[in-house]
Amino acid sequence: MPTHLDIQSFPTTSDFGFSGGRDNFRAFCRRVFRAKEPRFLRTPENQLVVFRHADLLLFGTAPEIGNLPIGSMYPNRFKKGAGSERPPGWEVGEVIGSQVFTFNPPLHGPARRMLLNWLGPKQVSQMEGLARAVARKVIGRMRNGETIDLVETVADAVVVGFWGKLLHLTDEETATIGRCAHDMTRLFHANRSQEDLRVLDQAFAEYARLLDLAATRGLERGDPAMLEIAARLKELDFPDDPHEVGLVPKSVGAVLAGNLVDGFHTAALAAANTFHALLQNPEALATVRSAPETLPRAIAEALRLEPPVLTLSRYVLRDFHFDDLILPAGNKITMIWAAGNHDPSVFSEPERFDMSRPQAGLTTFGSGIHICPGRYAGVMLTRVMLEEFANQAVEFRNAEAPAEWIPDHFMNQLRVFPALVSRVGPSR
Ligand code: HEM
Image (tube, rainbow, N blue to C red; front, top):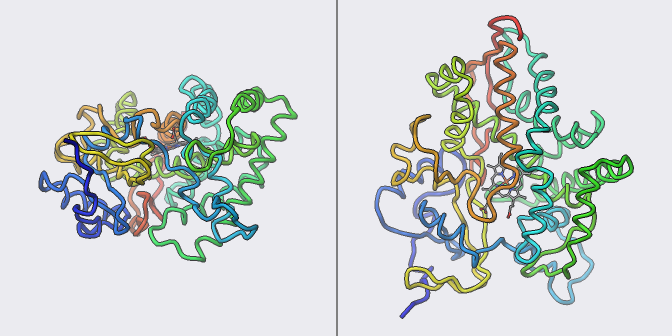
């Protein structure tokens, strides 16, 4: 006879010292994977926490486990009789309500395809030249012997510059979005303050305004990608349902703003974290420099070791039956995706950089029908940056000041990563 999963019986994430941020996450993994028990954890608010590799895949691929609807993220906003008041966080909600992250069937599939039609592997490979031109310019400016911040000077500059060029934004508009993307970091603070929300609202409103402008101009210019998104958007003929299915984006600009938050923000973390993992592992860096064909494997291993996304939410759409247990519909779930990559039952000696380890089962980008549709763009940008360092014979080494990771944060994110630049030969 199946029984309801007793969430309250599990220890909390705090019992295992999890508060977010890279070093804390690593210490948590060492502690929690030491034994076979507990299978699950709970948040202090009694939300189920899934962290073991097998369970991340079980829950991540189950059709009963969907995305967290916008109405569950912002319950007051969609309550019957909600007034016209705009509490802190409103502008963030405006953008996120158009993100595939908040959609479920039947809207989720076609909306996701609309995105993949633009950012699928074939399309992204055609964007590579643009990314390379941006990376070449950024790396070309570096002077021998100078100390730079690999986060701001390289990862953020190339990632934001790439999307800016792709969307035909002016340099000034791109720089403004860069500042907004920097402020978006506060979205992932474990203990968001009112000041965080104020800054976030400003950043999201400005970012959404500029992406709307980019979409409008793109449509006027007859940009095929924008026209295609507009055509697909018209086909999304579903009534708004904030509590499960989602809200159909109201414009092409809303599609771009909603779904490029990670484009502008998280993709830069992927690059910076890869640089960090390689600098910490000189043998791997030497291998990549001498055998460039190993680069994709090195990036995958770097992102296994330093996955940008630590946790994300999911939601139980229908009662989920598993192993004689039932998790009832309506429950929110915290998925510690990054922990899948550090589960020693799948990745032995998880803190060791090992380019030869099998790469099946990585949880860097989630899994199942929700697996990150932006992963091709994210990985391409990281690869192109590393290739351009090699093409321009620019090497970077650890500077005197150490890299700093943001503590109490649900992303594995470097605040600053000082590095010393050496030009070791002529550019190719
Ligand atoms: C490169 C670094 C990135 C990482 C580590 C990352 C990670 C993730 C993860 C863990 C998920 C959850 C998947 C799941 O629940 O199974 C996800 C979903 C998603 N990501 Fe990314 N992401 C990255 C970049 C991007 C980029 C560049 C974009 C957009 C251009 C993007 C857009 C999305 C969207 C829209 C979803 C929701 C997909 C769905 O529910 O179907 N991500 N990402």
